Length: 161
Image (cartoon, one colour):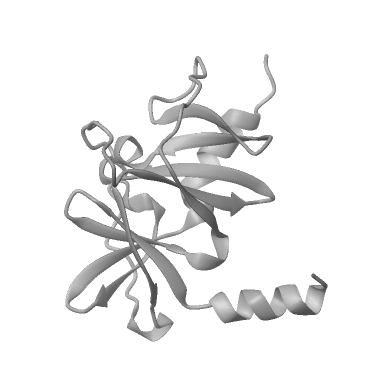
């Protein structure tokens, strides 16, 4: 695919978001960062990383770090079920996976209908929010994927001392 086609695809995804649920709250990720959605699979534990980084998986020959959104947001861990899945996203040329309770749908959200998030409370994870929207009378928390993964990427890629 040449650069013109890549830009056309990126433009086509602008304003489109993948929504997912954690407990009774709906969150979204910009669709232009989402690579694929896969089921839960064997995750290899990595020692000495934050508790919400569950480990790594081998996805078609690529090593992909996996974070659990619930744990990153300070919520209680729960058993995975048949709706739990891993959303693979591309951040700074690296695939990263996030475990979510349930993927909901792909939606279009207008930037003009987005409000800035309230003051940050890191315990709730909203320091990763880009904005808040409403969709069919439901509140949607829009995640800034770069902020969400920034600390994790530094942690995983930091050289050993």
